[in-house]
Image (tube, rainbow, N blue to C red; front, side):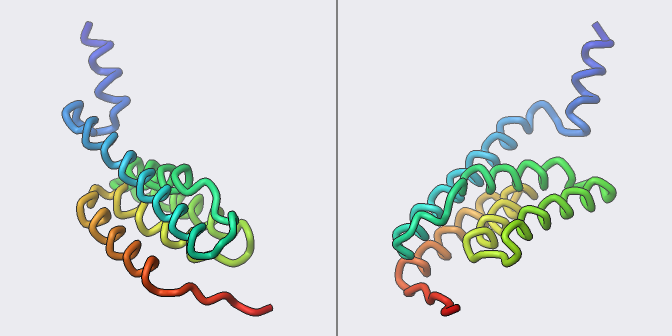
Length: 134
């Protein structure tokens, strides 16, 4: 029985079993904020170019939550995030906002991330988006 308990404790990588509900809360808030920003930016821009907001935000939150205390894994997590941002050769406002919110939720600052997300959402609602002419 001790072997199974040790496997579970080792699999949590230092995370307490009591902190699992908070971890799930972090992921849900990151996904919710990503989805909200996707809806707002789609409405403001009039296009459907903004996709997978909840997925990207939750994925980055998951990466950050897993690597936040280990330097080698942090470098790998940052590289994965940079690859995500470099996909279309220029980071978009949408991807940048999702990354910021997901990093905030991933390091455990869920309430400040949620409040910051609401403030940024209010700014997006009341300030017109400028489009770049090519």
